[in-house]
Image: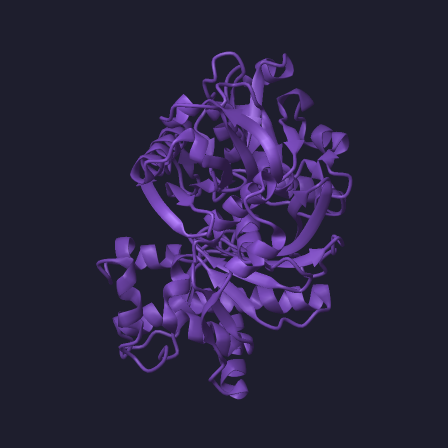
Length: 497
């Protein structure tokens, strides 16, 4: 009865992991799905691909472990955030492909909102900057650009959701239209202080409130799923935990006290620092966001979002052909002693925190005839670490709390060269846990907490370090590298402006 199924719906794949009562992963399944790029800067997913891939891996993981419905204590759901869907309430048919968080099509609308003087209001209510990254302007685009959609929305016939909401709708055959506070907080429509949708912001974006889901807690019974939906026989199973992927990772890393921070190295990189019951207003254009909502109480975090992290390695593989598989990057980067003066700013989709420049584009500087593939590979990895260091520096200033250590997870956290360089430029230990599946673990922990499988103390005991990377580079060398990086970033900024 102590098994928890974690559904981890990501940007490029859907995954399912089954955790036993000891917190061990006993089954896992993963399925990639197609990415669509209809125009430069546009990124879309087919909603059916999101749903079918997630359902398939959920059934596969349960079948691998031969789990019955009675053996499943609950389900935790975590998801790519900000990705925006809109569908018909009666038929469940989407009106358009999902607009992915990376999509920049609404940068012009964001400029208009800023020019009209609304930035301070959005920051105060939502903790967010006005940026195409978030769901609100994507939803507005769908209302304005898909034939007949605005009329149907205003008539109460359409439902909006981020990916968690879409999956809850599909899992419950349309019975539940809900989200949690962590996902709601990423829409530019949610007052993070009152914990409610905000009528003034909805009016500014011309979005009818009738499309919005109900906001529920991150830990607690959110929906009941018929067992046969999951390919099981027996009683219904509760979805008892929901959180956006980065908040789930923060919970999975057990960063439950103010000042504790983690970085997830995925397609993008995401740094979150717990600020407790205080929604700290950033002076450095970081995001103030909801970490989780448990027992009607919101916990807050500062967040720095880096659009291109591991995706730069994919670019070296697929775009330039420098490596055959992503894992080859470490060996290639280690083939040279240093970056040879090369700096790669991977602003392929603009720059996120703390710059928020939609018009920045990628640059590589410092090239000479002596530049080799190893220097480019090393510069790519170092560019990831430099972006994280920029965010951490701003975060420490905002929170007025010195960082003691950085807990890390995600695919690139397994890269020892990158983690060592991260410790070198941050000047604090970088700690990699024994299990780096912290996003899925966080979703499982939120569900297990609500289901009585674990207590908070139990969860703290489940987290164990695997390796600690201590700073080894001299402070002077680290400072010089940072200065050169900052100069490279300046060359990337405003390129499309």
